[in-house]
Amino acid sequence: MKELLDRLRKAGVHSLLAQFTDLTGAAKGKLVPLVHLDEVLADGVRFTGASIVGTALPRVGARSDFIALGNASTVTELPWMPGVARIVCDGYVDGQPFEACPRQALKRACARLAERGWQLRTGIEPEFFLLRRNGEGFAPADELDRLNKPSYDLKALARQCDFLHALHDALARSGLDVLQLDHEDAHGQYVVNFGFDDALASADHLMLFKLAAHALAEARGLVFSMMPKPFADQPGSGLHLHVSLWGGGSARHPDHARNLFVPHRSDGSADREATLSPLGQQFLAGVLAHSPALTALAAPTVNSYKRLRPGPAPSGTTWAPVWVSHGPNNRSAAVRTVHGRFEWRVPDSAANPYLTTAALIAAGLDGIDRKLEPPPAIDDDLYELPAVRMRALGLARLPASLGEALDALAADDVIRSALGDGLVQPYDALKRAEIEAYGAQVSGWELRRYATAF
Image: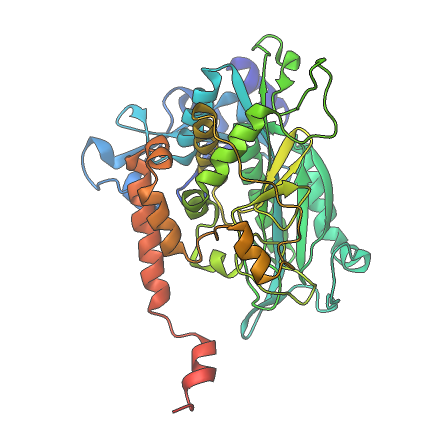
């Protein structure tokens, strides 16, 4: 603790941003003077539990306080907030790990893996929009960003270079491995790719990315948005998870771990022509089997289901999955398999990374425990497949609404048990209220269609 305190003081840090993540996936916290570092690590920072979205904590009594206990290994200086370092916190209530804390949920899931000597590694790929406010709401920040197929547009990339360079610099200086940034397939849409890391660290990194992007965009008069689908005529934003399972290492020698999803031939050599090992196939089968319930967490808003819809987009495709499916290097499927890993394409940019990953682990372990086999791989482009072929394949559709997905979560004993009713119940209540609030609104589309129609 003293070494950490001395290092931070020498770096000019005067305050800690004690940060936790609420049930919706939003970063919350307090600024704490650095001199109280020992208290943040030993006793935690006190919050009024009832003021935090989704806790369902009372206003009085021993369970009314939410304690955010800091993790020393997560302390990171924030280049966009000089003198401030973030410390990631876990939630505790009445002296016990809080069941409805998303990070605690992922820690529980990772502990189940650790019991078997395994570790999940993920590479999270967030897509986002850069917007500006106008009289009607929001529009793409770049008025010249109008190509029919804007993916990889270098002209738009150059026009937003100031923000993108500042974002990359801030993340790199914070210790994140940024692989690339590029323009995505919608106007005003961009994507960042991060290197693989332990699942818990990857989720922490994503929250750091959101903190940086929000602050850097606001400083430039822009709006950073991870709304899944802000424009009806444009593709939405995904939060793809690249997933692999590792084992065989140790705390002293983590570099000795090997990728358990890599398939091998009978002679022990890696089979480069195959995608996943038998263990990887079982994990994948579990993810597909629990897809309806997983979607309630991976696509957590009413807006999410405007992304998960069939039909064309101006750029040619939505890039969002519709069917419970998998296939080798198939970006039209819910899961794209490649050698030694898979890309889960259902999550959107509003997904809470801790809850989504925790549920993914529960589904994968169920597939392994029951030795499930995945359905046949799909080589076809599911966006182009004729209806008769689709019926022959017998593919199930992902939930078409948040209500449908929540019903699936409520009925899924494996995912519900893994997350705990203390988390699932307030999550369900929070999202049911969102559905009710949405249903009470009158949209511009309704006014245009019905105001003078009868």
